[in-house]
Length: 363
Image 1 (cartoon, helix red, strand yellow):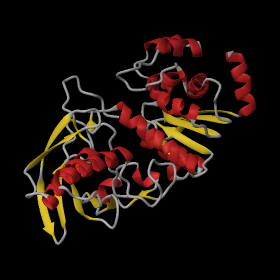
Image 2 (cartoon, one colour):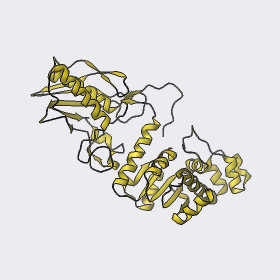
Image 3 (cartoon, one colour):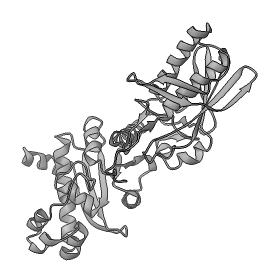
Image 4 (cartoon, one colour):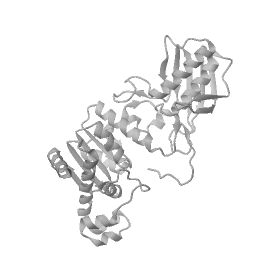
């Protein structure tokens, strides 16, 4: 995960906000005196946002307008894309369509029904409100078909969770506030939640949360797990476990490098280097080896103490996760520790009987 810089960061706009602004501009062209150069929309929390309109296209009974997405200083893969909205008269009611580069939902567990365009509920609601307001302003019926498209969206979507979540053909139109906040922890955790929802809806009994690509590949191969069983946990072990407490699965595997999993073993819920640190004194106490107090990294401590330290860290991470589950742990819990080369250097696993016993001890 990219570390947040110390300087002030510029926020941006979600694809949902851009789609809404494009829709408002296109409606003005369809019903009014032409597409304006810019539009203002009201975001879900009442803030007014202004967008410049680009790439207007006109046809027989339809108008399309684009908005270039500005994600601010967030490392968003959709920064700079143009979000288009094409509006036309519908056969009845408000209808959403997935145009080029916008995905279609193919798996249950997401907030949108299977077969529908991957346009999330809040953006749909925002566009619905703009249609209603424009219909009153221009004295038109609200029977409108809205087609959202994002050129190159299918290619960009390969860099997102969409293929794993069963969203095929392109990107999702997302956003709950309309605002992209740089390096948003909430957005990452929300993605973890959606991954869990999809896995459960598909009847999966085993999911894995990993800190990065290397550990994900190792764990997936070890247990022969499908892509949508893999949760991009990143640094947010606590956020993943908290959601699994309320939305349980039978089996959970946690994988990661020795540094991050040491912090988990020592009780950290956020494994980011800026928010938690390895306690080398505790490592020394665990192993009865005072050399570890002077280690600079968990990997250096492992090089001093050898495989027993990695196994102790794995078991400590299991115990810490059990504590975070607060009595709602899965039936099987496993932690896999890897080195930088992707080799498994430590592992611990407990089943239901051991979990029950461990919980009694914790009480």
